[in-house]
Amino acid sequence: MVTNITTTTTSAAQALPISVSAQVGIAILTLAFVLGFPGNLFVAWSVFCKVKKRSVTCLLVLNLAMADAFVLLSAPMFLRYLGGGRGWEFGSAPCKLVHYLSNVNMYVSIYLICLMSMDRWLAVTRPFISQRMRTKRSLLFLLLGVWTVAFILALPMPFYRSVLKVQLSNNMTVVLCTPYHWQSVGHKVFQYLFETIMGCVVPFTLINTCYTSVICRLQSAMFQRKGRGTRLILMIISAFVVFWLPYHIVNIIEVVGLLQNNKSLLEAAKVARPNVTAFAYFSSAVNPILYVFAGSSHIRQAGLSFMGKLFEGTNSESRSTSTFSRSGRSSCPDESTALQSLSVKLTKPFKSKKARSDSEAGNAVEALAGVEQLQ
Image 1 (cartoon, rainbow, N blue to C red):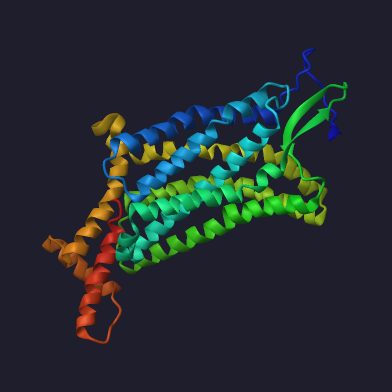
Image 2: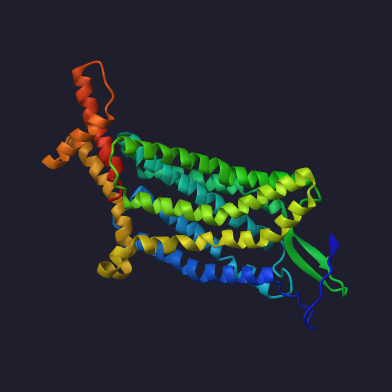
């Protein structure tokens, strides 16, 4: 398919002019690659080489870093595309593949965050069930499930991305890697609505439900301390919202514009989409920066191993809860007193005195396991 576009070239070499939007995209992609690719490799190295006992949170962070590093490998191709001024030079298959992998990364990232949130929720509300589920076998199945779901959910992307020849006003023809929907409103609405529902609405509903339950549980215990791991996960969630929400807002604007045949909304979405897409791409680079911020207290003592120290702290929850599971009581009198106080807040009345006593001990362990998370 050949379409006409009214533009001019800037040189006799027949190169496309670099627009302001493209310049912004180049700046964002360059910064993302320079910071994000080595940063995510450093996270992976820290987990593999500096962490002896890897918790669930640690392994989820590792998968997140690997997904981000992998998708950032496509940055040089996009930079060449935006800055080369000669259109897409890599063929149809790479055009579809790099956008497909970027879409996979979006789904992997958000559903790994969902797993982190569910892990927090189980640790606070059902600590013993959490410990029974926290096995390498279960985690491998869950991770495999997340990656499989991500690859399936991203399947529409390559079908809606194509290499098209564009004829310029001076009869020059260039090739662009661009969205293509066969001039069908239904296909556009499906793609953008599907991405927003499965990449934003569904996962964030689950995340909000988990953390609302966790917050209510901790407030009912009148225990205000927060674990480092919980704060780290909340920062990861916040970063994902900041970088991906504009992309999904543009999706909704375009869907509304298509359904109402509103040309002003469609034009606004068309202008904003390249920039919000590049902005979302930067989310793959921001997590290592968050880890540096969260682990800054370890830098002076541990040097380059500071991130390993940060992730090692996420294993304390498993140790503390398993200790209670084996012994059924705290080894410290002060902890026992604290547990008894917390159990009064959390325990529901039972018919028998024995059941009430057992419930108090169980709920006390739940409270400690939740609030001492990742300390």
